[in-house]
Amino acid sequence: LFTNGDGHACFFVGDGIDHTTVHAVAPEPLIARQWYLLSGSWNAETKEIRIVQRMVHPVATIPARCEASADASAVTDVRNPGAAFLVGAYNNRNEAGWFPGGHVNGKLERPVLSHGLLSDDEVLALAGGPVPGALKKRVVLAWNFAIDIPTDRLADISGNGLDGVAVNLPMRAKTGHNWDGTQHRWTDDPEQWGAIHVVEDALYDCGWESDVEAAIPPGTKSGLYAAKLEREGSEPYFIPFVVRPEKGRTSAPLCVVLPDASYLAYANIEEVFDPGLDYQFNRVARLGVDDLQQNAHPEYGVSMYGFHADGTGPHYSSRLRPVANLSPTNESLWQLSADMHLIAWLEHAGIAYDMICDEDIDREGVDLLSQWPCVMTMSHPEYTSTRMHDAYTGFCARGGRLMYMGGNGFYWRVAYRDDKPGAIEMRRAEDGMRSWIAEPGEYYMSFTGEMGGLWWRAGRTPQSLVGNGFIAQGFDRSSPYRRNPESRDPRAAWIFDGIEGDIVGDFGLLGGGAAGWELDAADPLRGTPPHALAVASSFDHSDAVLFVVEEIGHMHPMITGSLQPAIKADMMFFETAGGGAVFSTGSIAYVSALPCNGFDNNIARLTANVVKRFCDPEPFPVAG
Image (cartoon, rainbow, N blue to C red):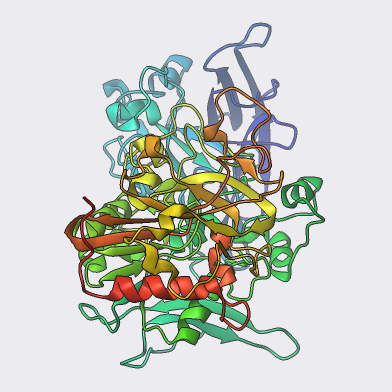
């Protein structure tokens, strides 16, 4: 069963040898986003094939049922013992053997394979529920995708034990033909989420064999490294990787967290020549080499900001595939390439540090973070799992010191799956700055059953963790900070030791200032601790810097940088229980100001002051 280029359902049989095939084509075209019950049959005696198409939810003026048949006597034998039973693709073959082709884009539910012809009533009886007793001897395979949703198992309920395997993470926990809207969490009634959404460009693991292997020498310093790949006549390419400290050991009081969950969300983000990109940047947009490479190779898979081939939003991303934009030399100064400014400053300043990744925190939790007195994020830790959030919260509660060095952090909730290393899941539910919106009934993630979307919608706001939260974004230029009176409070005055004047960060490699691209502000109503100090705030943002959508109720014009006083980055400091503390920059562009003037500037000095004090074991006093 498949669809042809004209949008009609078809059933075909072939001999699997010389590509002899016969097709039967349903006369009524399929309507997008409608459920159909399709059945195809081959009569071994008459050599006739037949397809029957039924609309599950009939529409007026359109036939609810249609069928077609064809003479298949030209196909002498339909047995194909060398090929797998596939759903979402068909078996194709070349000199190398069998491979899947003709990939489907769309939802599939309850595939059944039987021997012996079935009547209409029997086909309908197999569309839901257990296999009827009268049909058990005739049903060879019946997959129920509502079973074991968080796994790759495609459960066979025929009794024959012919379970299937989901390949390349087709989307699960998807509403089926019987979803009635009364339930929204798939764990409450899995049978209403019996669909799998397959797409031709889904990719979890390329499955490539290793060409080069290298052992990391014992005693290698923890940090970010890269494999440099070169061939004659081409530019070198760098594949980054992190060397963790030996398990149970640390080499420095500071731990830097590489936000690989966020890197995965942006992996292979699509940048194309489009007027919308110019408007976003408020200037003529420029594409880099990595952008062109990604655009030329859609087989690498899409980012969580793009769309699958059928227009649906990607739920999963993986590092087990080529990621064109995950390069320290990427020209866009976004994610890793921007985070290199922070690493360069740490190395230049001689500040010792260890490095771990988001995935490490998800697996090992607060006990991993608690090995260090001070933990530092990078510029854009946007995507966070529940176990990561628990770990950061627990770390602060135990007296840890957290330096949040970016903006738009702790924003989207994601999930990992223990048996799928290197993969994350995300659903863009409810609200937020997003390129696509999760479908009704599909807000809950298949990996964990947790609701996706913004963390503040789950009752855990960024403001309650780090003192500020996402307020605005704009990509034309960045702005400076101005010290607030709170910066003279004895609790926080040390942050500005050695800094003259009230203006800091009126420079930067990302937009010309330390406060830009995406900004976070304090908000007591969203959970900013009452004793938190906004020691500095940015100002002079352009009208290309806009309020985030979740801050807009009724539409109004005061959503731009020059009109809305709430659009600013608040630099925050506050103490936590157990002698700990939190420092937050509230800006993605902050770390890109560190290298300016040969690393000799007030942002570098301010950051060094915080690192020094946060790595000092002397407890912070609890605010009275």
